[in-house]
Length: 429
Image 1 (cartoon, rainbow, N blue to C red):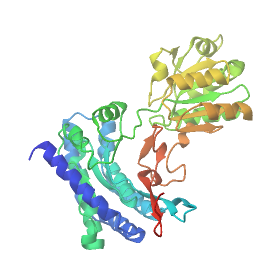
Image 2 (cartoon, one colour):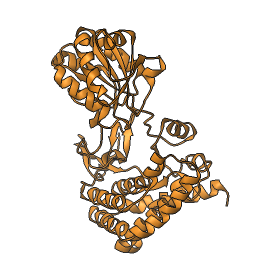
Image 3 (tube, rainbow, N blue to C red):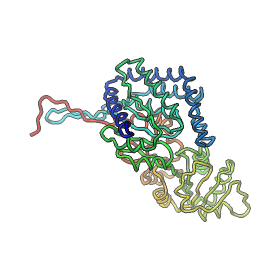
Image 4 (cartoon, helix red, strand yellow):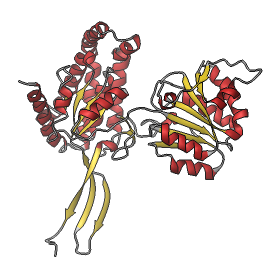
């Protein structure tokens, strides 16, 4: 069987499974998710054995200690995956909600109702816990899913998917579609463009990982791709800001967890308060040895006479303003008011998450209206762009696209809708 034939079989099986999934009730889906959670815990020993094989592969591939840690499955992480499945089971079913309803003058009644997307391909790196998270969210929203993790996690991912399917079949017998959750069985890189060429079967692709992976997937795919290239997030401290509040927000946005996509990468400070605020925040960021990449004006203030900064400070390059560091590194620029701040965010940002700190409502509303990002905040940290923080429960990723889902993607974002028409013989004149 050729690689294309193999991927076609996988995709056609998923398409058939998606039709079966659409027939399941909320109670049936929840019962399956609870059984899957129990099965993962019950089979923890087997999962750790499979994962040990993956850890050996990862070591041979030269993965860093951090990447090997992300790959590792232990009892705590398996328990966390099971807890995640139970949380998804407790969330409201996103399928079948009536979004709109109207009756036309001729008596035709119309309903706009949420439905599953169909077949969703999810591509990600390392972290086998993503397998359980993604599969559970897709299952609850009625979607068949095809999972492609990193080649270093193939044993873990396969066994996890098999365990979840077996648990579902134990609950529903033949009514549970055997191909509702599938793992791409080959590490061959050419499997991805082959799979994503099958527009007759695949409805959506969601890559999770670094910018390089996401761009490669978007370039080769013939099916729609929900993208999140990178998170170049900004905080703008306005001239009318409460500086104590601004200090707290800036420190949190950069330092609470710098390696995530909603961490701040650039601090913009209004010229009117730069002399007062920059030394203050520079000293606070120095507690974490945050390296600062500053424009000329900010650099001069931060290095002004009599100050002994705890952090390395150097002049920012043009490329720095576009960079997602995922580390204790921060760009700093002095701007002349909110318009210049918005101009900077528009040019250098990634449409992920941006914030303004100000007591001036008019200025805040201008920033909120003109910054075109998935999440825009007033007097709050960018770190809140997260499914759980938004009260959505689990999430499958964060979209920076403008068409379709945008921001944290939970269960609702894994649905589409269709119109239902109820008549009694109406015909169009």
